[in-house]
Length: 355
Ligand SMILES: Nc1nc2c(ncn2[C@@H]2O[C@H](COP(=O)(O)OP(=O)(O)OP(=O)(O)O)[C@@H](O)[C@H]2O)c(=O)[nH]1
Ligand SMILES: [Mg+2]
Image (cartoon, rainbow, N blue to C red; front, side, top):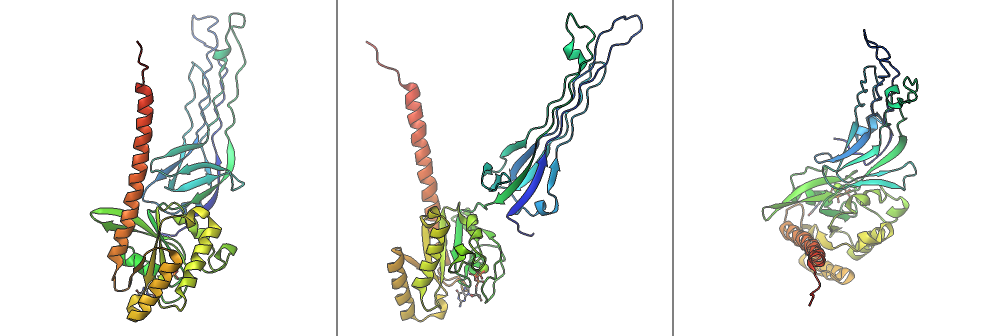
């Protein structure tokens, strides 16, 4: 499946159906009176977030979406039927922006979330509606109201629990392949990975989603390499794995370069919980490992995990550390919600003690 994380589409809701001018005509019924029905509502355009989809590629092939027009009203007081709605299916994590690419209309973060983007036009009244005691044979009807139309931008920010970042060739994709059943492309040259990949990690009978994104290089925020646009996909992760190639000379410099790019992109990203990993220890001597680990610990102020993604040594500890942070985060949110609920509940139960 091809990956696409941005797309421009045109949406238009259906016009309402026109009202009808009609009079009752029946044998032996003189002056039957008006009986023109109202038009039907036009079809609206909705967007729905669904699971098991993680690309917007469908919107490359079709960009125009139109709700159907409502049917016109008819004689004998028959109303027109409503036009069919259009529901656009998008992956969870899709944001919808107006034409200016800045004003966000909707952020679909949960599966099943539905948002109406354009409302179908209402149907017009038929002449039956305009009947009064002084005008018993009105010829007035309303035309249907027009639908709405708009150009929109869809932008996908994948939702994974943990994200991996690092320089090209650090071994991110190798790590993803080691701990999940994903089969990313792995090769000994920079920028092997060209778009984000997801995998599901099993740990302690539970699961979490891990995202692998293309490597970053110095000045990525200025567009160098593949740029920082893929950082959006790990923006909502709860924890980041910072993968560092142990075989390079200056691991501390590599660490700072990536941290710097994160900070340039978004402060929140740089402040996320981070697990620093020194990879490829199978190709290093013992003293080299100790030296680089100590240097990285000093630079990051965090414990550094040692790993060989290729031989899977040390991967389990990293996965468990990631899981610990994810559960801690969930627990903190649960406690906060509990507290809020309790506070709300207290207010409701509070009754002043009267004498
Ligand atoms: N010796 C050794 N080589 C490794 C290890 N992990 C990855 N490699 C090699 O490093 C090279 C790059 O690995 P990838 O997983 O493609 O690196 P990446 O970080 O995904 O690179 P990009 O997709 O270009 O950003 C490959 O040739 C791997 O075989 C390791 O633990 N030990
Ligand atoms: Mg890769």
